[in-house]
Length: 232
Ligand code: SAM
Image (cartoon, rainbow, N blue to C red; front, side, top):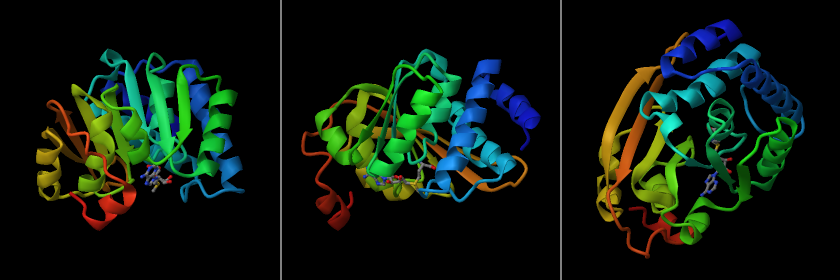
């Protein structure tokens, strides 16, 4: 996907892309490639591929939510910043929190934030389930791409979400029936399952939008060892 195709395709998400945002995406691409020589950030390095499989793919979250109406977003297991950094660039009003368990990736993200001069964004080196234990009920939107199976991801994420707001998982193929038990225990429901294919290369995508209905027992999220031993 070249830059022109990218600009055209994201029109479907009603994103008002400015020259400054395009410049920030370009700088982000360059930093990604430069740092990727030293630390493992991504297997995708060709520019057109990054624009399609990282930048455009991150923005597909807008298929299920109008982010211009939301204030706070947390991206768990953000890695090199997908989708969190891309969403911050395109929706600068959002207060964004990026969470990852790997310090090296957090160091990279801090450099990106500084070089792109992004404001109102923080990155935290912590496991999502530990972060969620101490930061319950605070985000309008929590998201994650390629981090864990849905039932595990729900335990990490839903306690962070304000009751009545959303967790949105960006997935390839996913069988959501496997998360039935987790949804019940965590007092939440799937309100949208959006299946589509990525333009140009046609790989499958599923976006799962989940609404947190009310209180979640303080028992959740459990410790990592317990989650692994007995996933919901
Ligand atoms: N979301 C990014 C993307 O789509 O390109 C990164 C995906 S990468 C496959 C998974 C990332 O999740 C890694 O950076 C890993 O450190 C992080 N991760 C996995 N489990 C985590 C947890 N429990 N808490 C925080 N980060 C986690």
